[in-house]
Amino acid sequence: MALDPDLAYGIDPAQRLDVYRPVDAKGAPLILYLHGGGWRNGDKAMPQMVNHKAPHWTRQGAVFASANYRLLPQADVLAQAKDAARALAFVQSRATAWGADPQRVVLVGHSAGAHLAALVTAAADIAQRQGVRPWLATVVVDTAALDMQAVMSRPHYRFYDPVFGDDPAFWRQASPAHRLSGPPQAPLLLVCAEGREDSLAAANDFAARARAFGGQATVLPVALDHRELNDALGLPGAYTDAVDRFLRSVGVPLPAGVAG
Image 1 (tube, helix red, strand yellow):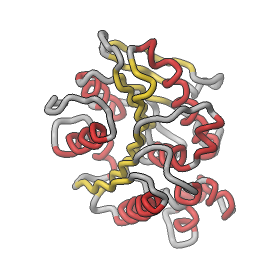
Image 2 (cartoon, rainbow, N blue to C red):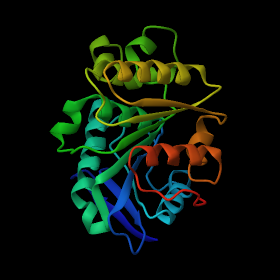
Image 3 (cartoon, rainbow, N blue to C red):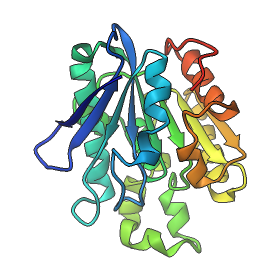
Image 4 (tube, rainbow, N blue to C red):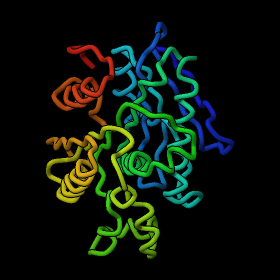
């Protein structure tokens, strides 16, 4: 596995990504990962972000990219979503140089990164303004932040307040559920901790809305907690197998039965 670190997809120092690739990659699928951290913390190279995911998918012949993006207080969540889209457009434009196929790109995010991935997938204008071309699929790993108008209008975790503020118009702009006005830009897999009621309800509601517009959206409850859903992705087992089956179902050429 080769590593191309700190590639710039924008002028800000935070707009960087790392690319992990098989040395002999040719026409490979490419997976772009957005880390979590409450929209104000986290880093693309933290062990829990890449230690299992990069080896697992590169062993299956895929290129894996892990992106940073601007964080609060420097950038609000809408600016962060633009960064996510810009990173997606960047990997599409550079894919062939890494031995990847720009038409076989998958967007994956966990927690805050999952919210951003869902927002880019729901809001066509965000992706289009950053030059994103069609991509194969989006995997949203455990976020309850899919309808922030609903979340902020009821008793909620206090950490949402400095992130989403008190303006209902901003809540709607930052909500994948409200930005979805037609089929999502790519098929969706919404992974959630089966014991986390807010995440599971949000995933089911968002999936129903996507399907009502004619889109493809699948909810995958898993018997792991929020942290474990990130840490365990890429480890051998039923969870990673289920994610890989979804990816194969939408046209990602991953071999079956390859251990992580």
